[in-house]
Length: 140
Ligand SMILES: [Zn+2]
Ligand SMILES: [Zn+2]
Image (cartoon, rainbow, N blue to C red):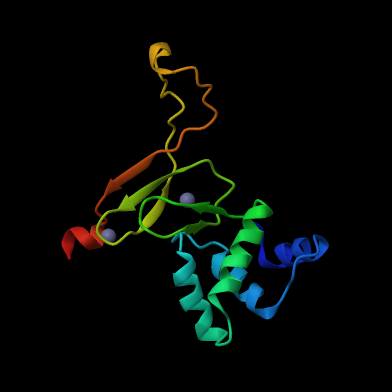
């Protein structure tokens, strides 16, 4: 994901709305490794922007996805997660206790499907979710 200033310029150029609410959402996403849910982004931005709506948060993250600046993930935690790391090909560690999601940079390029298992598919992408419990859940 680009810097907040670069993103604002990019959004304006594409004719997308740039408002203080939207800037606040972008600020919360830049360098955010927590893969926040849309709901948690809404709660976080509402502290600074009491008039912000959940709809605005949804629209903004979808616009950012359209620009290729965030990925929206469904990793089975029940909510869409917003991932600002679109630069590094990566996979995810997912805590089955609290739903925490973290990036994991591991090479799965050597994973191959045997020819008889391919069922005629041409595979373009591999996504691996590592599930387990985080350190907080393990000790708590
Ligand atoms: Zn946990
Ligand atoms: Zn990620």
